[in-house]
Image (cartoon, rainbow, N blue to C red; front, top):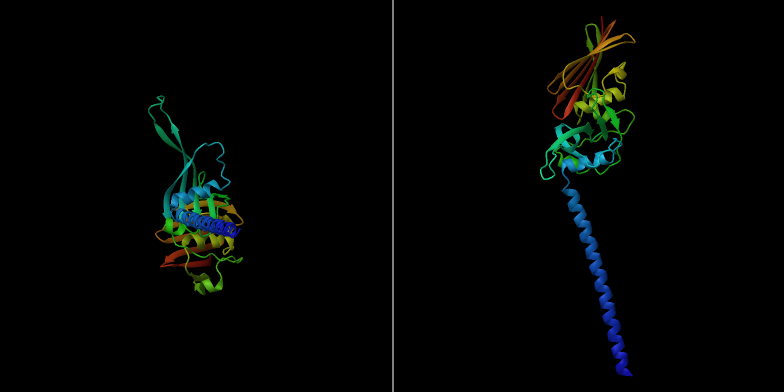
Length: 263
């Protein structure tokens, strides 16, 4: 009887040891799976992240079985993305003759969490919505600076800029030093915050070359863009005067000048 009890106890102990061992093994497997996932995330390339953004967007891609993305250009904190598909033009099944066809050109601004479709008109892009939000790796993978964008109704808060009034011969205005920003962000905020009269007539994005736009509304005749290296000059020509907007890069900051001139 005593011998049977001893054997029973030994069996119970062995079963408990096996259960504990299995639990530890599963725990280690779970940890390894988490580590593997983290490593895979860290290995995402700039194009991998761009593809995830495009996949989660409302860009109409339903008719394409397969599509691809290519990073065409990275400037400051903006990424130009080409979305394309491949066609096999060969009649011989053994030989492939692949050609690329562009579906869309996109401008991605990670810091502002904005995606624009520039295919039809680069200077008047269409906003594209997307849901992918794991953007932490994009700054390192795409080698772009991370800039915190204020969530306040006014994008350039007082703590982010230093401003002073300026006076010219036939008018006056304001000059501001916007810290830790880019030309694109400052320009976008001028429109968003209605920092100048008739800002609604400004192009949605900075043009790549000098450009003149006829308006002929509300006394505004036209708008002229002069694009230089790290500098943008905008003249809004009215029947009774000129509004000058200058945006210039200064190290990591941007100098924004707005002057109202009377004729």
